[in-house]
Image 1 (cartoon, rainbow, N blue to C red):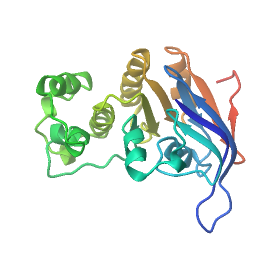
Image 2 (cartoon, rainbow, N blue to C red):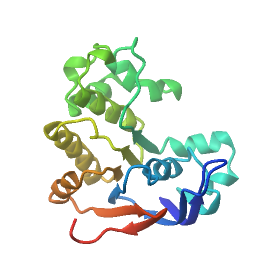
Image 3 (cartoon, rainbow, N blue to C red):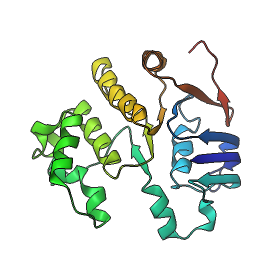
Image 4 (tube, one colour):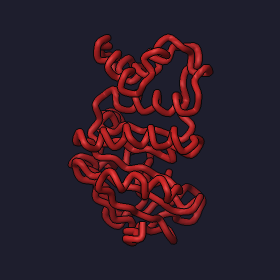
Length: 224
């Protein structure tokens, strides 16, 4: 689904941040991505959904080389990837349900009200459908962001430090939702520095742990 072969990337005017990156995300897999702050975890995720293009190597998204596609075709590929950020942004003047539905609205697709109710129930926000985003707690914001990320039924879900601002209970509630997505067939990649979170999650689902070190990607040891 997402393949990297000897991929490198550097921001303009800076030394190469990532080099010789090799990655294969296949259907139904669960991966964690670890590494110190500034190692390039967010950059790698942005490459995975076509927000950045490699400066070297080969990248394949759902059978396509993104550098050979026009903007519309890349946008179509990106619809197959749902992304959850550490600090999700919402339109504060719109209710939670409308924020979650934004990907459908932008795509010009109708909102199925029953499907929306089911989605809100899944993330336990059914009582917050008409609330405005500033009233949500940190955990509620992350669950709303996850609902928004999956509303287009993506094949892959990427989460960038999604529990970084949450306490342990809220972190595990969010991870449980990601585990459920994976067990339903979604490919999941979670960037995190929390090794305890990784261990707790691996007790419930088969997951591989990748680590960025020295600008390259390594498979972490079994001690995790």
